[in-house]
Image (cartoon, rainbow, N blue to C red):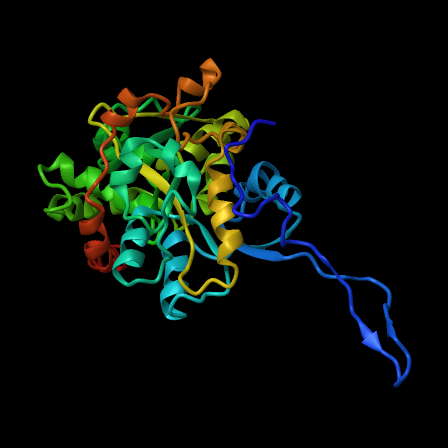
Length: 368
């Protein structure tokens, strides 16, 4: 299999699994003797990432091939959202107990750079960085990688309602669908960046944006009576799509395509008033125990073949533009420079600075 990965050791398994030869001496007058060879436990790497349907795909497409290539064992840590995982990094001062934070978002990367809690990266440590989208290099500071992309889609239940056309259909569902939609709209807690992006689109409907979120709070108050379910993680929302309780929702494009293809009664679209792109990131906590192997993991994640396997399986868009894709994949993914240029990416510095304030405002409205 073709690979762009360049291990830092002289061979893929070098320094990873070794046998030690213990030399002992007998009593005086007796020469050196060699006891039996002792096999050491394989080197381990602890990777923090999502659970749910993400985990088996990630394991098959990325983790198991990495273990095989480097002769190591990966310990999987599936606790938390991206913001919760970074909170663990911050609380532990950069030593959260995992070596790779495999699923962060740009706001966490920015915080990690500012607080010096994430390990700096260059092409020396991660050679495959030379292959990524040019926009990835501007999106985050050099303390992480963008390993895949998604966008904020609007999904609907094809058996219950007509296809929406704009973000206003989600934020003012009664105007489009009437009372039938009441209690069949989902809202996400701002612990999930999906919620923040949907709120930004609400602000834009009223002439605002990240620098003026007031229009979003007015729409959130109006939408509240139509909301039947509030969740935090994307995985928590999935059962409501499957059983038909939720008919309208913002959702990450990758998971939306995944569930649609799995037979859920949903479809996805990009609203006429646009959408927001998301760079899915990975980084190494500054206090990680196994930084050498963590660098190898980030580089492996950007390998051409690994990218193809993972993105085809999880229905997300690639980190690099030099890969050939099937036509059905290209129809719903970001695979060209023109598509990448058309996506809106909010100012992550503002998001990082304002997210707590916006979360408090969301909680105040939803609890009132």
